[in-house]
Length: 171
Image 1 (spheres, rainbow, N blue to C red):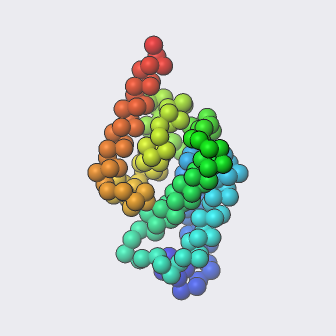
Image 2 (cartoon, rainbow, N blue to C red):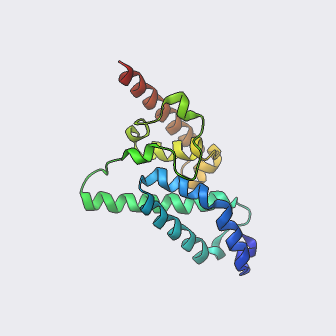
C-alpha cells in the first residue's frame, strides 16, 4: 500500500488482484446479492484510492480494506432500512458459498444453510469475518470498530443462536 501511496499504478493492480476474491466473498455474504456485492467491491476500491493518504502503514492493509467494505455494507443496510421502514430481510443467497471463496469448516459443523440468516447483522458480520475470512478477533475489532471483548461476545452469542436453531430445526 505504501507504493500505492506513492502513486505506483501497478502496485494498486497487484493489491486489487490479491484481495479481489476474498473481498467479493465477504461482500457477497454480507449483502446476499452478486450485483450489489460487485458494486460495493468497486466502491471499496474507489475509497481505497481516494483515501490512500490516510492509510497508516503500521496497520495491516487487509484490516483497513475490510473496515472500508464493512462500513459500506452498514451504510447500505441503513439506507435499505430507511427505504423499507423496517428490518431488511436476509436471503438464502447470503448463506451459500460465495462464487469466489471457500467456506470455513464451520459450515459442516453447524450446517449453515438458514442459520446465518437468523443472526442479527452485528452477529453475522463477526461470524463472516471470523469463520469465512479467518480474521483474528483483534482484526475484527478494528474492522467493525468495537472492543475485542465485544467481538468474542458476539461470536459466542452467534454460535449459540445457530446451535439452538439447528437443534430446533432437528425436532
